[in-house]
Image (cartoon, rainbow, N blue to C red; front, top):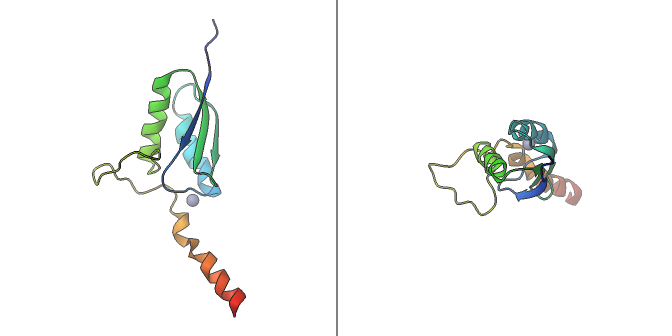
Length: 103
Ligand SMILES: [Zn+2]
């Protein structure tokens, strides 16, 4: 008996950086029988293989708990979770680099 494997592509809210791939990936892998988890920070994209639809909703719940809910999900004050990746807060570095170049 072979199980059909499907590919899920989930775009998430709140960007994550390459350093935060490992902790996010670990949490997603906790969902049973999820395979080939890949995260793409440049697109805020999460990709994985699954067999059952309920596995996808489990991953979506996990992502929401990590503060990276699926794009389009409406976040209220009650459901808001601070994003696991807070590294982007320091992305003002780029404007500082600009200043260095200009001066
Ligand atoms: Zn990060």
